[in-house]
Length: 285
Ligand code: BGN
Image 1 (spheres, rainbow, N blue to C red):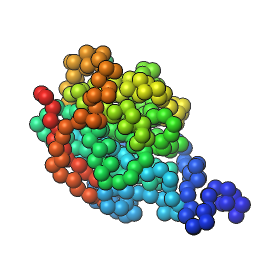
Image 2 (image 1 turned 120 degrees about the vertical axis):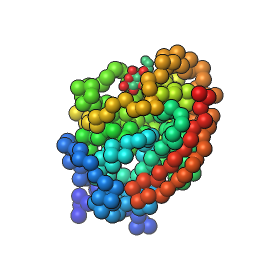
Image 3 (image 1 turned 45 degrees about the horizontal axis):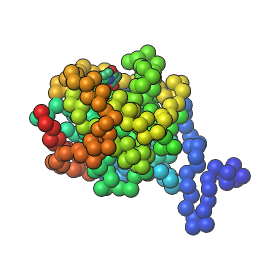
């Protein structure tokens, strides 16, 4: 009983907040890699609430989290990722809602804009404190890599199989990153100017340094990910202008980003596994 009292802060009104350190973490994980259907996932996790929310049954998590996944044409990957992320986040006692932000056909993929849209749409649907921007092809390999927001933005996907489980370069800020609501507003989100592959994550790092944040990273023993194999997607060709755009990143920070993203919501579906938002992006292509 003594231990229990230490772990949980029992309040007078009967609300038990979750402890700062979740008690049932496993540490290193091997991961699930086989394809799985939506129906099988729903059967595995019947406790998922409409719109893709999951929360601890026995305590209240102080941080409300949204996971924003930019998406196009990766149905099998998305479900493999969720097969890993749902039990991972359950053990972390997260109160989390999954958002899949799908870019409609007809324009080149714009990851930065999709992340901004995910943030803005999630803001309309819930009171989130913490935003994790998560690629659909990344499987976390250690649940001590705790998905929480703190004093500064965090880079989660530090060590990937693709880069021999080492940080690719010191300024790499891709794959999975987390911002508190305030931090993301302060940096004015992502730039929307990176049309096609590359550069938007480097731009985001410049933005946060410019606002005097630093980045947090766990040691590579914890911040490990497996990237599912795929070829370069059609409609997401490497952007030849990315270096030039990156050079002017800072002078645009406050006038281009979260506050200027243009899009049209085509459809919002509240599925048991996720809130699926289909959007068309008006780029100047
Ligand atoms: C970098 C890309 C990132 C990408 C990583 C990992 C650029 C900007 C021009 C220097 N940056 O080279 O966007 O996440 O590789 O693949 O291309």
